[in-house]
Length: 211
Image 1: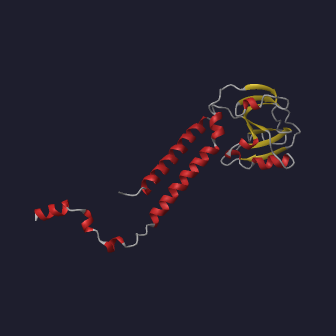
Image 2: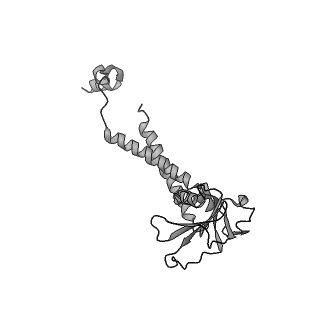
Image 3: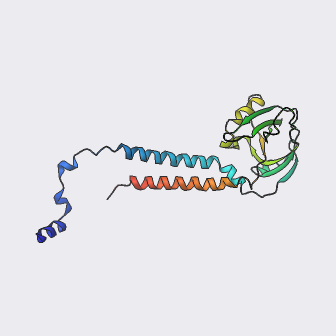
């Protein structure tokens, strides 16, 4: 008996191949297919979200003190400080303004066009929101181009276009954002990239043919 077992173990596996078994259709595994699809979709979405937050992540690594650029309208140094932490002087009173809110926040925001291709987004705390609110004349925050506002301000560009007569371009200063308070974006970016890498590598491993 032991000799027979040894003969089977030492035999060529090809001798035991059954043609009929090999011709059977592959079993349907819908759960596995759905799982692989979810892993692929969530991995790609994580990468897209990480990419959309790249400007905020870069801003979080900026110097902690704001650069004073003087008057926002007259400044000629904006391009040199793209994505940086700056402080400017503006006249927000009696300027075209739109109000918007962001999900999970009680603070309302206002976007104001101070001149052609010059915009300011500033928060208005609930206790100060009202007809007597006086907009600040000195604002400090993240300076970016309108198209680089990012996913956190999705939809604001459309409101800016209405204020600007159909188009929204130029520079926008997001008042109140500084590198220290934006540090959470770096942690979120690392988490998103790690999650995407885990999903995509696991997906590649599961789809790899078994030898």
